[in-house]
Image 1 (cartoon, helix red, strand yellow):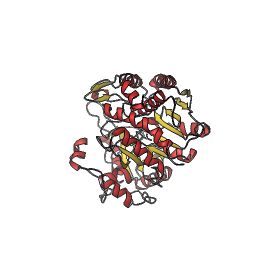
Image 2: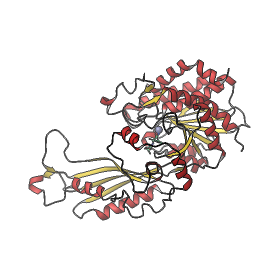
Image 3: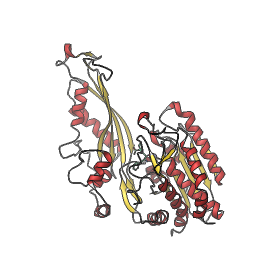
Length: 455
Ligand code: BES
Ligand code: ZN
């Protein structure tokens, strides 16, 4: 029996297992789900053990890490697989067509929170390895699986775990399936991700909410001021105005431009996917360059004042917002946090007090495009999807990949099985059944391809 035959024979059981995995509400951000997160980790550990992995969970300062090994042969290369079993909060629940933790297949898609990001994709890697183990009795590589439970909260406990377990995690390259294909039936291998820096901005006015008729006009309104300040962060060409923000930013390379030009693009389809009347971004750049290669600044949420039923005529005592900035190679998260703090404090009127909480973040991920691993990954994707993948970048962040490089000295292969419209972090998250199946096939071929790389 070949691994592909094994996959064909076990299709039903594989979907049942995935459904079980998806049914745990492993929402890492919410303390009320702590028990569910742990239960999910325990289930995953047991499942890996049934495949033949030596598996256990490790406590961390937050949610447990699932770690599993299949050590086939000392002479074989060791590959570290990374994924996450935690998920984003499913809210707003009213917008889901079926409950987020009761997986359902409709129109060829599996609908559930985590279906794509990242339980479904991680499970494809696991099931691909299972197929090879069951069909051939062994693996051509040593496989180490590190599956964490707090990727979506950026809680930051995993780097310490990696530092503490450097020897256990020793490998030659990392494989991560937590990104996307370019589009339907156009598989991709991703060679770069943006980094991230985040801050929270607080603007304080009067020491309590006061009557807007009694005092309006005489003092600053923190909500008005914060909105004005946010408005100052971009110029009319869509460039960020923070002094020194672009200091380390390198131009998009010709090689990158050439790769992106090969990608099919329709502005109309892009607009339709998102339901926007027009696109907007930094002048002088294409959509892919804007979303993958250029730094950005976005308010993720803004609050202040009265939002309840009816009206309330007040000058609110404070306003605040959360801002994240996506970073490109060489930008330092803390440097960027310091720059935005300095700028916001400089432009703020003297009539308010401004506080900026700087949360730092992660640098961009750069994957060498001339090494042998990327090509091996490309060949595995071709076998799994029956189509040559494109090489692209993406705009999201996988902070831990930077730690893999800095702590373990390892490059990461980003082999995404999802689609850009799989609704990750949104209601009705989904994963195409075909993408899951082709992901499993890719994962079943990948060990052979990686074992064949000349080291
Ligand atoms: N799977 C995503 C990362 C991703 C999204 C890569 C889209 C490529 C395209 C991951 O789970 C994620 O959401 N990461 C966060 C990290 C943040 C919380 C530090 C992100 O990018 O916002
Ligand atoms: Zn993810």
